[in-house]
Length: 193
Image (cartoon, rainbow, N blue to C red; front, side):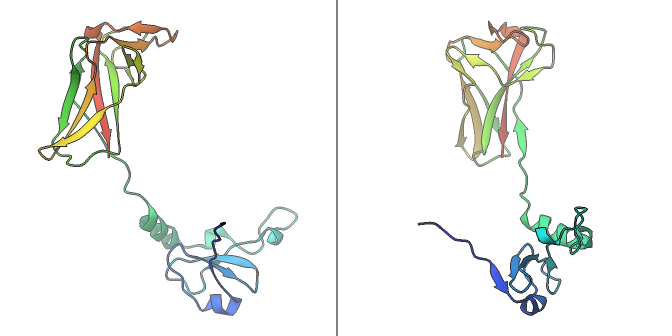
């Protein structure tokens, strides 16, 4: 069954005597328009309809600049996300005979939203120069290998399994699969939370 969203509505007089919550939208049934509320302005702010725009494409009824800064500040502070933070591991050696690359994040005690491995160039190789970072690489038959995250002793651990397979990277300019010279690269794991 189709779902229908219905917002608060009322006559122009009813809307004029209503102070909606920050970010709330109501419909003015008299003027056939909507109003945006900031949680403190009686009546809110009426938005212009398409038929309120004149031949010069100028809005005759509503000026967005008339909305006070406090409206936008309250709106964004109420509904903004906390943002995404990241933390990276130490640089770990690329060893084709290692079982895994592993690092812990002692200050993090919950699983991250996302984790990603990066290769960091230590000396020129495969078209990359020292300091270049890339997440486009593979191990053996697998490209962009996943990071396994787990909690042990209330500490987040992130692990990249590699077994005895060879690390490879697409050449920076040609895209040709190129096996890495292990001394030229380090692995870095970044977790996002």
